Length: 135
Image (cartoon, rainbow, N blue to C red; front, side, top):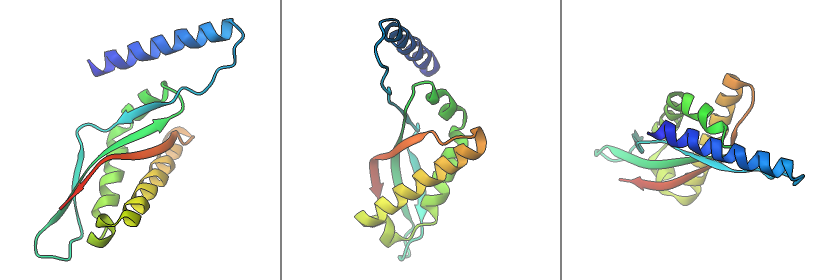
């Protein structure tokens, strides 16, 4: 069902692009978002005896809806990279606002580096944490 909706979205978007081109209009970037499902849950390095965990929802912003197919294909690789980054963070970094931004930036840079290695170009324009829970 998810793939059908994605293909339908791509078809409708391509029709509107063709219509705009035929009318001589300039085309603008049509941003799209790819969300990892289910949410990413992993442990981080805790200062306490109790094990700490973080649960996040990640949305990747790309310039073209066609890029969503590439992201879906590489989903396991990208998910594993995010889990590895989160698992190596300290409790203080996970719980601070500046630390959260540093983690987000590291995830963004790592994912683009992986995509560049896999497909020859970085695709991610922005990486957003839409949910960020920790204990």
